[in-house]
Image 1 (cartoon, rainbow, N blue to C red):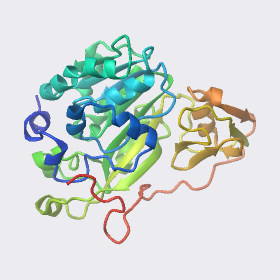
Image 2: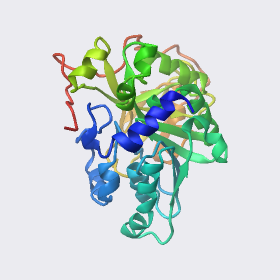
Image 3: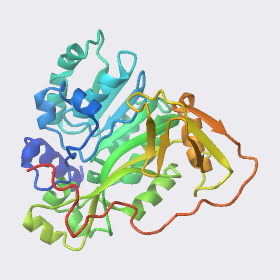
Length: 353
């Protein structure tokens, strides 16, 4: 076992008892979240709520009946939220390598089943390393959605994680996850700092390296759903990491082999017809694509496929085809694509004490 893996297990199994023990705002989710999510959160047991260390909201829409995998599930907060949404016909599998966290999650499985009125248990927790998912005998092309909340930054072989996720997803499925990214590459010395690593900072990928790894794994067009700049409240840790900006980012990566490397224009458009749960008036695909019900919206070929070749197809009308190419859509920049803070401090602020 590598030293980094050992330190991460120790940090999340022994050092951290609840989210109150965190030193930064990195491994936390802001209070600003949809009302429908808050309603489900009010039904989650106190223990997985207290042992939650995520940095975003990893609950995509249209999950009824879906099979979902949660990487680095911890004490199971997100697994239990999603188990409510997939319903009795769906299934949620959580994977983690910290025994203490898994014991906590398993202790509350039946409690949540009864709370949600399910007649069968639709959650499962596996002890395993997310860098070797295929060793868990999970079936390739079997999952509709894979989620993860502030965990990929903790592991060493991030490309292996992405490749395994790609293999496990059905075609048209997606990896919907939140994680921490950095404005520059982080030194080897800092990567081995146990506190900086455990706080989801020093294992963060340089954002452009992540984009290259995602594409190498088969996810050709990473889409940003939302982002926020992080604050580091601990002075000693802030000094160690001085000069590096950190961002909590939610991405969605679709398993669609025909996606192109850039946004190409084929003169296509879509109309949102409504019907996606919790999005009756408009549906947000990513930070640049909000589809209001009934409005014709021009889209690139990749966005077209993300709607037409996925579980969202039944909710849209599609105009056009791929017969004629009109060039590239404008606006593909090379700067950090994330929301920066204003005046040197995060607009979102710290979400935990």
